[in-house]
Image (cartoon, rainbow, N blue to C red):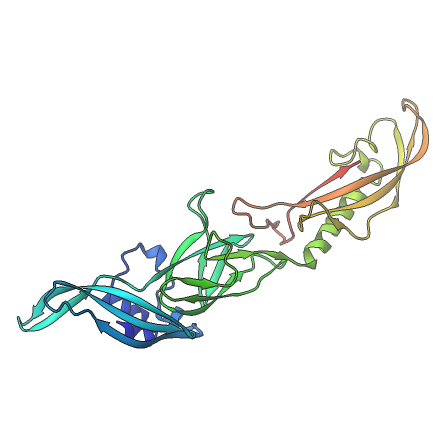
Length: 293
């Protein structure tokens, strides 16, 4: 069994010792997944206990993965002898190890050429569990669109999980990093609304501020529009910028005449139920754009 794992023969190892889980957790118990490993199992020593007459015995294996040594104890039970003569033993403990994967803004990841979704059973469940045979693997988050950058995570699977970014909840947690393309798209969305509300009768639109629309407004122009945006509330997907309109009001206005109106335009990215950035049919971020005082 250990020789099969050391050779990366996942399918044969699974046929010998069934992990006893549903198929959706076996996505990476494949020869292809193990072929992508940067390090596989190294066998140092295998020794059985001294209870030679017992029906259940313990076999201890000293092993290595990526230079990290560990010892795993297997339970084996006596099975029917072949031709009534040759002793057979059944291994009761698979060396398939659960790895819990979660994502903040990431919905998929890959190991080698194999991809899997990080869909959750419910909002209250942290991540999703997959089984891996011992080895060192690169877990690569799949960017949902061009506005997200990703970084692979190196994971060592022994008889437990070793990873450098453990957040105390899931073994592996991916976090989306939003690049400059998102800010550029937010600026474009902001300028589109600013320009739409900067003409008459465009300023009468429901998305325009109440300070620049109304029956008493007779003319409007853009004095200054945002050329860059800042993040606000420490949120990398929420932006704001300043805009100034020159507004002329006539009869019916509290103070008729021409004046400058300064506003803040806010741009907030929308996300789906799994926390992944939503995009429109043409591939642009789905923003909510609004005005504030």
